[in-house]
Structures are given as structure tokens and as C-alpha cells.
Image (cartoon, rainbow, N blue to C red; front, side):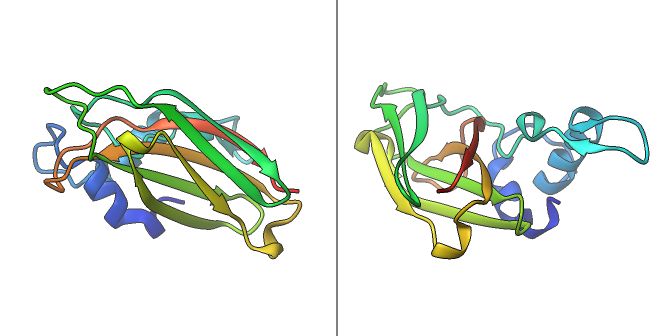
Length: 156
């Protein structure tokens, strides 16, 4: 499940105390310990337990996402900043996973100061269930916030 996003996980865990482990290994450890539900062979993934990033930047506050029109989704958050760990130019990184197509999409086209971003899913996503996580990355390319699970949307 996590192998297609190894590079993103290595970024997401880049400022956490990891020892010699890669971000991918840390995320996989966490998933195996906390994200598998049920008994073999009837196991499922607990998407809410998946941690994409773990770092010292402040999380986004007041985050929500919703479908605003068919295949159009809006992600919004409050624009809270401070001079210690929440900067206006922190990049907002949105990771989405299409459960039916087993496909990840990454969007990083907004900043903390923007307060929102909009996206349009392709037509082939109609009827699919998409789960999402969001976190921020600092301008230095090293520091991140912890990831936040957004929940699941059924694309109309």
C-alpha cells in the first residue's frame, strides 16, 4: 500500500527523530502496528491510522474537505500562523487515495496563507471512494507537520 509514495513518506518524516530508519520504514512500522483491522484472512486497512507525515510544524487548523459539485472538491483551513512553527508560505500537501483504483494522487498547489484549494477529479473517478490526508511542508524542504486524516469522499 505505501510503496508508491516512498518519496513522500521520506519527506513527511524528514524532521522527526528517526535514528537510521527511512520515513518509509517509520510509516510502515506505524501502519503494521496500528493500521490493520480484523483477523487473517479477513483483514482491512484502517485509513485513519495511516500516518503520512510526522514533524514539528504546526498542523493546519479547522481543516475540512467536501465535494462542492460533481467531481469537484474543496479543501479549506484557517490561516493561523506564528513565527515559530506555522509560516504563511508553508506548502499544503494533499494526498488522496482512490480505493477502487488503488491509485494515489498528490497535490501541493497551496500555502498555509491561502486558506483553501480546489481540485477536480477526472471523470473516471465518478462513483469511486477517495480518502485523503493533508500536511504542511516548510520552505526549507525539510520540516513538516503531522499528517491529518480528512476522511472519505464518494465522488459523484
